[in-house]
Image (cartoon, rainbow, N blue to C red; front, side, top):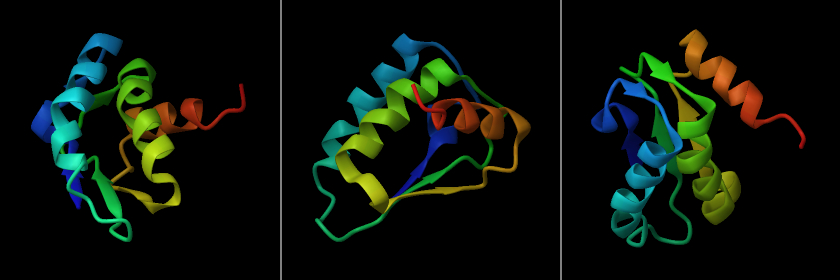
Length: 89
């Protein structure tokens, strides 16, 4: 399954917005088979904040683990956010 994040907008900011996006997409996630990869495509995303990404990507990774793949992460905003999320807490 490919999740095109630009469907949620090109400026992805705020925890409430990220949580809302994840909850809205949850019924679709329930249809993913146990072997299927989950590809998150950042193409078209201009701004991604750590708060939005934490609410969307963190539960996605908790649920699907290593099956989550990230595409089109060249944007500096996306790279910085992913770097922050990957720091040990």
